[in-house]
Length: 427
Image 1 (tube, one colour):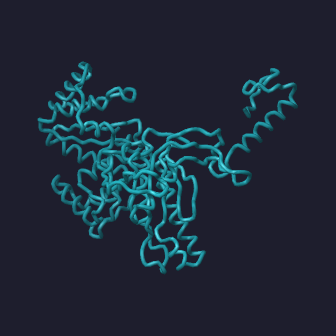
Image 2 (cartoon, one colour):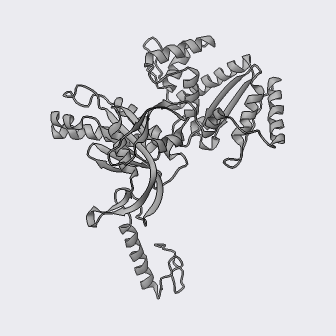
């Protein structure tokens, strides 16, 4: 309720309350808005709901050596350090649509799957965990009295919980959770080495194939009667979808779709004759779009061609040119342990093979890939709009150079999640 568009009838059309006249109508609106304000948390902006049973992926982050840090620093300096640490974590969590439920001193309790559930909440949580490790590790030395950068431990578990209001009076929480899931996440955090992410078997089953993990075996966890299988997440596997995971295990034979397959193959034949083609595969989730693309990939596998493949992801819709950048990073064989200088050397070697002018393109691609521009290259004194235009021109020139040598199969999956810059580039 709370609508100001109440009818002239005797009852509120939204909640059925009796409305005798204009005075009672105004009073009713005020009362409903007051109730709405009482039901809204001043911190999260989330309306308090009745308790509900949910599957959540819960992350618990903890700062390593916080007691020693507090001992060395003045409270005011410690406050600045904690703010820096919490802001770095919160930014990563927010980008992946997780919810910071509570700050517990130097610990952070995070929910993935509440209040908004996603089909890939476990994947988002693990990706956030790796991102937080990188973000905290990359923070500048927070204070001259500290001899090393901050380190963090992260534990993640997926399980059933009850979500709802907890507490009494002013200490009441509108989004407290009850169940063993947050306790297990906290215990797993205690098992993690500094700057590592440890997950439970339940979470591992949901992200298997998408991340590279290693398991130290079953671990005895305080408060849990049976030993638990745990895993340390090392890095992303490079696989970006459940379909690719299924592909590695083998697919069942394709049934039907003869007309669609024939159309794709006929368009590919035109490409080989020099006629560029665009095909849009559109349909409901799970209808088989990726499978059709896989059939085409298998058909051209034995032919001389270049395949450029990228995928749009829901949590990168605000990251300009993410699918393009991800493809370039794979093409250039960038590794997480590579230094910026090593990545620049790989970029230079690749561009030389295409007879590009390094003086013109290295600054552009270094900027695109967030690499420092060496001093012996000219600086980019361009407006943002002009920089984007020059980057598009360079990407298109690279694509045309590929097409001069071989037919090019350019695949973009999940276009409905594309960021505006990538859509403009494809246009």
